Amino acid sequence: DADVTQTPRNRITKTGKRIMLECSQTKGHDRMYWYRQDPGLGLRLIYYSFDVKDINKGEISDGYSVSRQAQAKFSLSLESAIPNQTALYFCATSDHTRAFFGQGTRLTVV
Amino acid sequence: DAKTTQPPSMDCAEGRAANLPCNHSTISGNEYVYWYRQIHSQGPQYIIHGLKNNETNEMASLIITEDRKSSTLILPHATLRDTAVYYCILNAGGTSYGKLTFGQGTILTVHP
Image (tube, rainbow over all chains, first blue to last red; front, top):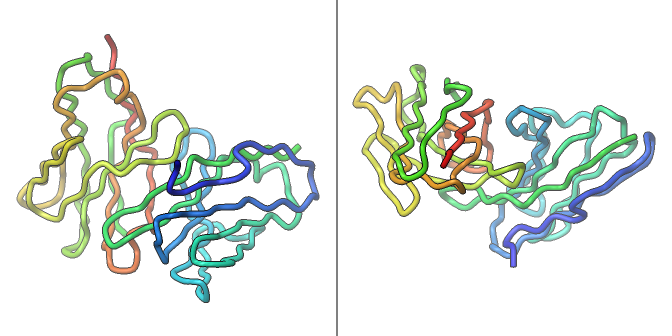
């Protein structure tokens, strides 16, 4: 079983729709992150959270929001999806040495 | 976090050592050199990290120059499954082990 689980793995949605990507982890880490990856590029940080009461914007937070429902759960929402949010999304956790990534959610906005 | 420079692509024959270079001439004294890899759009996978000493684990070796301005990741016996994008990332640690600045990395292709 994966330590960092993302759902759904693939999603196609229409422009203007609200969509939520979910992430859960069994590693017991306080720190969680959401990244976005566009084709041929490296990952970019959207939001991160160091504990349940802590939410921080990353490099590219516009158009996104997050919710940290519990230590193990961190959700990313697109309030009104647009085509240029089509990308691969990764959730991650970290301990005191490294990051651990989920398998990704491929989101297509049409 | 400071920036790194990596070659866009490299090839390696299966069974041979793969040596992936990374330049980080503006590295700060408290920044570690981290290597992650991403296999075919899967989530990035941690490989190894170091501050100033050479490091080795079950996956790879990391050689950091004495002035810390460059480093080399070594996969001693590359296999086809090592074909991936390899990212060299500087990270100061502390509260930021998961706040990673990814460049475009090096696409390593291991061929039979």
